[in-house]
Image (cartoon, helix red, strand yellow):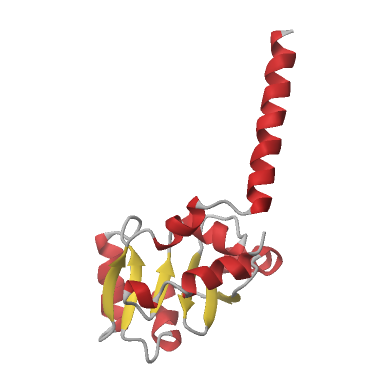
Length: 154
């Protein structure tokens, strides 16, 4: 999978969504964008690139799996790292379907003057269109399921 191209597609949609950067907190979207599988992942996509964030439990795993983004491991909380990397940002998009009110409040407190806006479906819109490699994997999965079902019926 071309994770760099996926991130570039998101970067290309920032301006259309009226944001300077997007903080991806949905684990499925983070995996789609970077290849990382784990229970703690955030991806910050800005005009100049992408940063993958996680906690120390995933340092080695992130180093081996993450593609297309710089890896940063925060020792305590994501909100401790964001002010530095978002310097100069005016509007930050948050995934409204996955960010809780408590998390939004924490981001607002940590980020001060940065306007937080809900970004709806930015990554999901890109995920809807399957890449050739994805389509081939889906076809292979269907073939295996069909073969298995036929075997069970016999």
